Image (tube, rainbow, N blue to C red):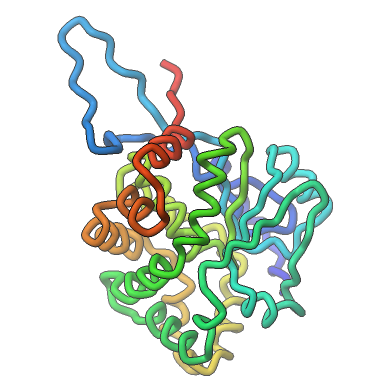
Length: 292
């Protein structure tokens, strides 16, 4: 499936042009406006220096749609960014189903780490239909997406753990995280990382919504494809909602994560098996001090 020709120029940053890969962008550069972790930063006394402002590191964590159409130029562009690891969050059943149209691409010099969010049993026709119904629910408060994203969070601990171990142990090695569209499984993890760093919820939701821009060329083809799924046949309104990436959906999801786990830190410790020290390292490795 190839996108239609377009002269659309994506804003850079955060988007990075990679030949043959859609929705490719850096999740770094966002200001950290709240103090992450349990201990707030004290207000400086009169005459003391204000602590330097911080932001999320650039050129370390990238997100994208699946890379099956990457060109030789695109591979060189990835390498020029220092990328040597790509985390693929799709399931084996998904890859098998789509191998004719979106085959797995092995890139020389770049390791593909298979880190599926969903186990094989989660891709039975019944589970797919239920998940699609959650995404396609056209409520204005993001409720359908919240249910679907709760499903992702429940299934993702071992998948997300692999990415987080990279962040903890290999902070000098940029990586890419992707699923199919780079929207849902990837978007939830990106949001958790930004929340862990201390980015405010509105900014996180706006970063998530950038997928509306990143996938704009592909949307008509994606909608056409999804309408062929039995669980979605004839539900064009629901499908259009499903392929959307509205900020309200992520705001509702962040509220759910905060209520259920106390935030990203709680999720990473409770579900992914990280200690306080691990989380501190992960947080430190995705933060950067801004020059004064």
